[in-house]
Amino acid sequence: MLQSNKSALQPLIDRLTLHSMLSEAEQGALCRLTASPRKVAVNHDIARVGERTEYACMVVSGLVGRVEQTSSGERQISALYIPGDMPDSLSVVQPTATSALQALSPVEIVRVPHKELRALVGTYHGITEAFWRQAAADALVFSQWVANVGRRPAKTRIAHLICEMAWRYQVAPTSGGLAFNLPMTQTHLADATGLTPVHVNRSLKALRDDGVEFRRGAVLIDDWTALVATADFDPVYLQVDYNARQRVRIADAA
Amino acid sequence: MLQSNKSALQPLIDRLTLHSMLSEAEQGALCRLTASPRKVAVNHDIARVGERTEYACMVVSGLVGRVEQTSSGERQISALYIPGDMPDSLSVVQPTATSALQALSPVEIVRVPHKELRALVGTYHGITEAFWRQAAADALVFSQWVANVGRRPAKTRIAHLICEMAWRYQVAPTSGGLAFNLPMTQTHLADATGLTPVHVNRSLKALRDDGVEFRRGAVLIDDWTALVATADFDPVYLQVDYNARQRVRIADAA
DNA sequence: CGTCGTTTTGACACGCTTCAAGAGTTGTGG
DNA sequence: CCACAACTCTTGAAGCGTGTCAAAACGACG
Image (cartoon, rainbow over all chains, first blue to last red; front, side, top):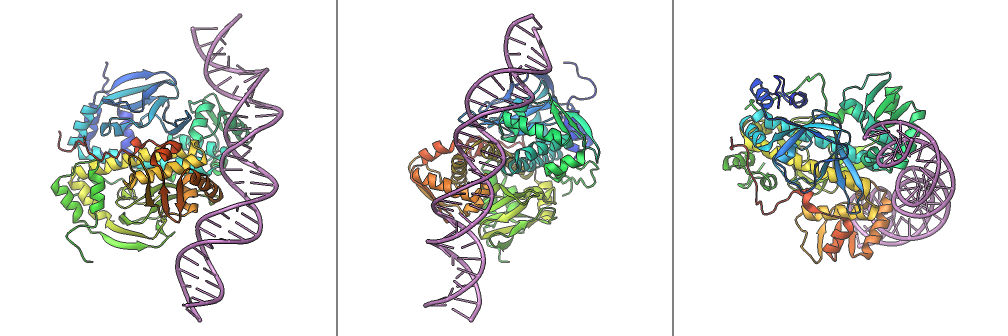
């Protein structure tokens, strides 16, 4: 494959350096990882439950969902992964997946061999630390999802998810309106919120009266502040410190 | 405080070594950490949202819940922590809590200064790796909770939680019956499952007909296999490999 | 231009919540 | 050691949010 001088993994580095300080050497090493591109069609699996894998993947474009499935066949999306995310970084250490990863839109990923990642994690303490922080940050998002699905009414639930995604895509304004792509269907939204597609549709209709429109993978918001209020959304759990005011690296401190 | 030759943090080491290999030096260093004991009364907070802390804690006895709260005052327990767990290991790196930690029963914890933990994580690569794995494993449990709360009917939801706790307490048999303590009230159960206390009560009544009893913090199960079936429970997500067949340490591999 | 997946809408059913009140249990202070 | 208070747990009746079933309209794509 053609390797441009800018690594395909740059989005991952950008993600990690949001919360962790990586040395030049570490960033360089990450850049030099093998990153084989791969396209995945909508609704196709990137990882299946129980399947062993030799690669971890990073999302380059599109939207990936972590899909849990009950024995009665009901689906629950428990996490959404956007470009720069590494949904299965755990697989480096636990190669057998316990939930499926599925493309919710046409998706481009790059695959990184576990072998190389292990070598990196073994060599660069700062990279291990960065993955640790990322895993911990992910856990806090999961925790919010439990609360969202468990305790909020349908409309609020959907609004909250929209707010989270706006924030993670870094398109959330301080006020006013905005528009962004959220490439999923209403059925996907239902799976992510623990509702039925029919009820999602009705709730979206209700949201439309509040100036929030979701149509064919695009979100249109008239008044961000109002949406945040109806969504009961507080972004602190996302831990995204865009100013990186106080990143502290432990690895060299001792 | 009196420091016996067996560290108070041994349960944490036992937990970490379930999935990660720690060298003698690393285990010794963990043992020598300052661990100030502290008792917390029922329903009292161990950590509050937005509060900064200088200590991470390990549960010694009792049950701790991670509590999310919506603006309308509804509570959702998104995780349960049992002896040996370190609910706020993330705080080492992110000292401001985004969800509350609350004692669901009388609880004993030990508090470990962040400063010391940071020194350890900075020195011992294997410890960082172990924390990383633990965080990733926790995330998979969260993922299952999203599915549990989002897609299962009340009775199944409660049964699933009981199964998980039996498994984590390592009291789950291969068949037959069992009894164990799960020191929480029906209201706590409701908060953990996203139901109302009233409906939890009714569901417990229904479970009683299936030979599963929950009374004042004690669980009595006639037939484990039957419960697993009604709970739709598959323990793989808990990643507990009691045989530790294939723990691989990355830290020294490079 | 036809096909298939997605969105929309309606009517109805049901699981869970709400409100309310009483019984059981635990803890506490006199 | 009893009496009272404060939680828990339990049960009933009624209401509502969400699910289910069904069918039609719409949109994307080959």
